[in-house]
Length: 240
Image 1: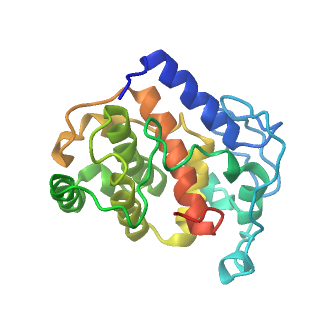
Image 2 (image 1 turned 90 degrees about the vertical axis):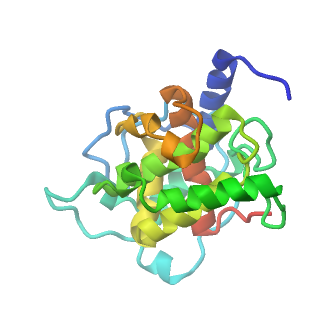
């Protein structure tokens, strides 16, 4: 497998991440507490060149019916205002890197069987996640952000289990946060990749990872993984 320089990989990551968002959006890297369901001022780090709409129309489901959020109170976190309509306006799920990629945010097919040593590593990861402290922090946005750093780090290190780790982490995340909140949290993480902290990257050894990856690389990949999980939850992405 050829090794791409960190600078090139970082540039490619930002280009890919920027392409996920529709043209004309701007991201405030510090986060804007004035974000509302029908209007968002911030724009992504790399404005997208695409003006296409999401490939799949919003399903008429109970989740959609519950999409409108009640007015935020002064104590309500900004991410609570996110709606499915807002997500579909701002995110183009057709511009994600393919799950089959071997260099950036891969996700194995459900029928793809890993080698036995990888299976052992995945079992170890699943067990370690039960007690991993960064995955239990009180703030749901930081909790999910920390968990998404795991497949991001495995991808950066290009470990043999990299394409299989997302499924384990995604399943854990879905158990850790109620789905209605999780949809909003994932959008918030994708739209604010530089917010929150990255201290969890220094605590990956208990999960069987060899070290701490660069924060910029990890944030880029975790944002893309956030969109990939979000697309699955909303039915905008049909996994192979």
